[in-house]
Image 1: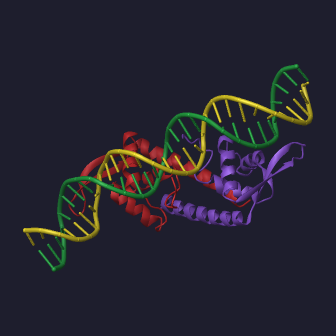
Image 2: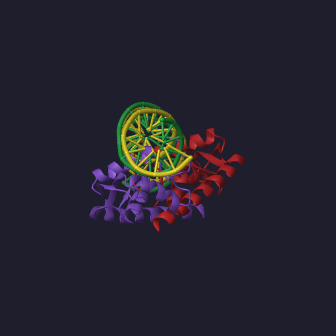
Image 3: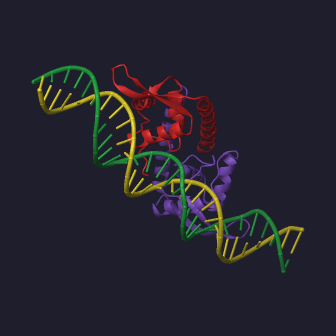
Amino acid sequence: MEFKDTLVPGTLDVLMLRIISQGPIHGWGIAQRLKLLSREVLQVNQGSLYPALHKLEAGGWISAEWKATEEGRQAKFYALTGTGKQRLAEEQARWTRLAAAMEWVLNS
Amino acid sequence: MEFKDTLVPGTLDVLMLRIISQGPIHGWGIAQRLKLLSREVLQVNQGSLYPALHKLEAGGWISAEWKATEEGRQAKFYALTGTGKQRLAEEQARWTRLAAAMEWVLNS
DNA sequence: TCGACACCTGTCGCCTACCTACACATGGAA
DNA sequence: TTCCATGTGTAGGTAGGCGACAGGTGTCGA
């Protein structure tokens, strides 16, 4: 896989759910927002972005709708569903738990 | 892969290096210590443990030596090499960086 | 008006790191 | 003498990323 420090493997879903939870947004926007919020540390490339988005939609955690962007182009806007909100809460709790455990070991 | 929340993918190496850095220890002991330090949250199974250990040894980050355990059995004890210490520092810094970025996004 | 560019969505094949399941050996206790 | 904890190891499978590529559409400057 050769990770390039652009992402913690296994966390793409939470990250995307979290960003989508802040209001309807299209794929490209998610990538930009992730970069911005993480202060350039975290990044997704298209080859990961869209497949992940489709998986989340297929799982019923997000819903898509074609709409116009501010610039007047067509783009697919995603929003969290009810189960999506639930999933986000679970994943976020999971991360908190694992990150805490990592700290215990790393600072022991 | 089906992760069962026993590990954050991509962090096995740091975790093992960190534990080994606290003094020579054998594979089985590493697994136990990880579980203990992480308060039962983090766990490695043998199928991941030994291959990872061999990879670290092949890379020159740890060195192995057959010795007797306290109970009188033979076991392979691992210790950090010079480059191993360096690698540990790097990986630990990497984790800190990524974990911080995760927090920024998740708490935005 | 036409070419460059930013925006936006998407697919495909590959690789790696982990997982499950299994094999095997030894010392001590029941 | 069998069972359990300890201890090392391999084989095969798969998820979740990655890089490379493909393609369509507005906008703006030359």
